[in-house]
Amino acid sequence: MVKVIPLQVGEWTAIGVEVLLPKTTLLAVTAGPGYIMCGALDVGLLNERLKERGIIAGRAVGVRTIEQLLDAPLESVTFAAQALGITAGMSGREAIRIMAEAAS
Image (cartoon, rainbow, N blue to C red; front, side, top):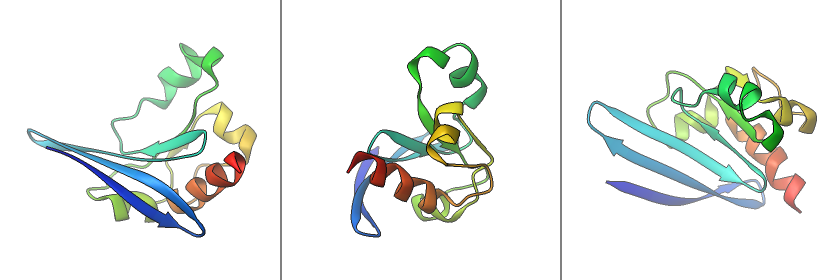
């Protein structure tokens, strides 16, 4: 099952996506030019092999719901996210706010 959920983050609307898979759930929230995701996201791959794409993304580990993803500190972020001011340790919610602001 796939759920797509509109989310209010400050004055912006972000989109949450929850994909229920056998023995795991994939979680992502996107706003503006980027996204945050659960531990399934491979930030190293995005930074190394896909660096030329400039993907703005962050990864939080140990989360099981969209709300937890928004509240958790980001464990790692891409180089492009760092250039936007998003840092490891920042909450997912704060990262999404920065992404949304970048789009406006």
